[in-house]
Structure formats: structure tokens, C-alpha cells
Length: 243
Image 1 (cartoon, rainbow, N blue to C red):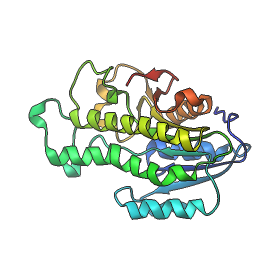
Image 2: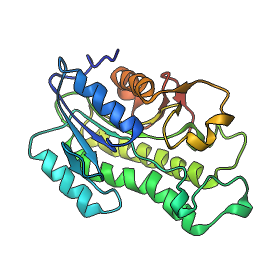
Image 3: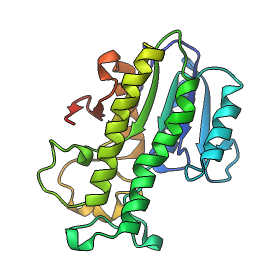
């Protein structure tokens, strides 16, 4: 069960990465909340029916998608549900030691996990409503916390998420001057049974969520969010993650 009563109804929502595991769950759950949500825009690179095309590797595509949606009016909620941890075709996998560091892999991981969602923010933040609560939320990760890093490794992914967390903080401070009711936040979804976590789930000793469970948790965190949440990272259980 999700709760959206802290937002004005009917909500207009954009989910970036709506063809992925968590992104699809976000879009489905929000679409089912017809009592509070008026329209859900599903954005993805995949040519799927009912989806708005967006390629986060191409700023012109991001701008075009934002302009298309913006013609219909302001948004109450934007969720960026994209990210990259491993990719067999590009030989990308989390590094266990500095000896595995590769500049091309680092660049690809940093682009996917920091630059791409930040470029989405650049073009979608101006669409957030100015007359009430609005939220831009991006999937981050607990491993992006510098203070919480006790085991090392996964250099590129950690660094990229830490970079995203820093820009979220910057965006929140800037947005507070333009739209005091807007909230810019990072979200840690927990370990979710998606392709992103598939090679590493065997090492996990805590709970593993389905995409629907994780998205439900995070939507409720978003609903609970007030101004004190802006510029910070929040876990699926509502706990604040240190920077």
C-alpha cells in the first residue's frame, strides 16, 4: 500500500527508466493510484508503447523529452530510476582492488550513475510545480556514502554514487532559492531482485526485495519527505544515510 497524501491531487508524475525493474514498479504502482495520481509519464530508451523516448546519453534527447512533457503543465514528482553496476558487453564489473581500475570503465560507470541523472535534473527540475510540494528523487546507493564505507572496493560505483549525492546536495541548495517547497533527494532502494544486483545477491545476508516491495517503500519515503529531507540520501526504511 502506498500513500501520497502529502501531495496535491491529481498528481502528474514522470518516471525516468520506466522499462527497468524498479522503474517499471514505480510507474505501475503510481498508475494504480488513480485516486491521487492523474497521469504517469513513463520515460525510457526502449521503443515501448506509451513510453516517452529519452536517452540519458544524449542531452538533446533529455531536453526534448522534458519539453514534450512540460507542454502539459508542471510535475509533482520526478523519479530517476536508472543506474549501472555491471555490464558484460562492456566488461564492466565492480572492482575488488585498485589493480582492476580502468579509466574507460570508470568513465562509463560515472556517466551512468552521476552525469546522466544530473542531466535529467537539469531539464526536469524546471518542470516541478512552484505552488506546493514537489519532489525530484534519484536512485542512489548506500555504498555512495563516504562516512559509511567500511569495506572499500567497488571503486567506480562508489565514487559515481558519491558524486551524485554531492550534486543532489548542490541542486537542493539552489532549488531552495527558486522553489522553497521543492525537495531534491537521493534514495537507497536496498538490495532488489533485478538484473543490476543479480551477480551479487548470493553475497547478501540481509533482505532482498522484489521491485514492487522496494518501490512501495520508496514511494512512502517520498510521501513522508519534508524540507529537511532535501539534499540528503534516504534509505528504503526512511533512515537518513550519512554523507
